[in-house]
Length: 227
Ligand code: ADE
Image 1 (cartoon, protein in one colour):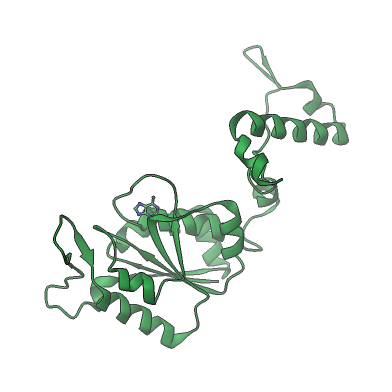
Image 2 (cartoon, rainbow, N blue to C red):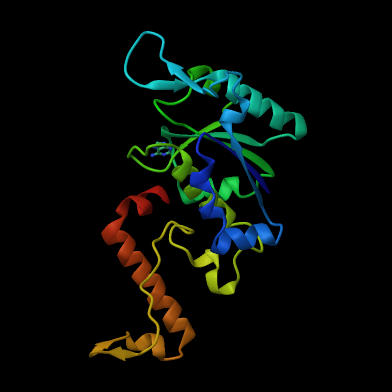
């Protein structure tokens, strides 16, 4: 998989891809992430990428020209399955969307800034608009990092058995059950006996039950969705 991220703040996106699982995924050749500084595509001598909005009002708007130039340059090299715009008014990211994107070959992620991008960018180029939740960030970069993390960890070979995505929360519309590690007793607080019993079928049944209870208690909406 190849991910091209278009941004005015590439610095913000360096460290997330230089650590841990995302770094290893790139080293293994399972994904390549490319950062593109939108200012490099500005035709303006001040490297301007934003301007005042038509009709007046506070806040700058990202101009179409540099974005068009950057996307066109990328599209001339290869076909893209999706051009995603990170925006608080997009579809809220969930595990289903991450799963869907994880089978794509090439995607572009466009990070918004200021008030956002000229509507014509969304109309002409963008195939999908994604939000990471009902709150407003200063820009799309951190949202793009969240999206990329959720997708890359699903690529075959990225996770090993210890970090398997199969038992993650949401993978079956259930939250994950409680988990414990050694010691079996700490300051009198005990690990549930069933988990140290060695009875695998019983442990599985317990985990399923706990996952269901936790979901009913915290996220009943997930159970409704799966019906
Ligand atoms: N840009 C600003 N806020 C955002 C959000 N919540 N999700 C995605 N992109 C954003």
